[in-house]
Length: 199
Image (cartoon, rainbow, N blue to C red):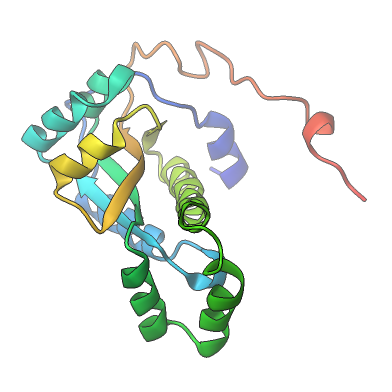
């Protein structure tokens, strides 16, 4: 299928078939795709955690608001986190990035208040989320992006302090009776003329 066909068929999965598992090769491909995700100045202020362990998913499900069952029944939950320690980030870019990129950060980003710097980190993470959802659609994997989580409790469960959970994505394969499938509930998007302008 073409990419556009896969995107037309992509939807936010509401109910997973817990008996269906994602091939390990596809999981490894998704990890590499995330590693290759774009970010401003190649800053990569992120960490991606793949969770398939049932007991950890059960713990996460309890702090996932209305997403409890999706977390339990999906094959894997991927937690997208941004770096939380500015000194750690600065050390990272000094080691990994060319001088021009480091200077851009020092001139335009570093002078901002800490909350704005972390907001800039968050935006890079969301670029990776978009790439990930598109990759899943192209690979025939169902997905559910979830902002409806308790980030601080996710961090506690995952034992992370240098990174902060932003959003999670459940992945797996839909249940046949998922009410949100496009053939049961047609995809709703604004008309192309309303959202696309050509100059």
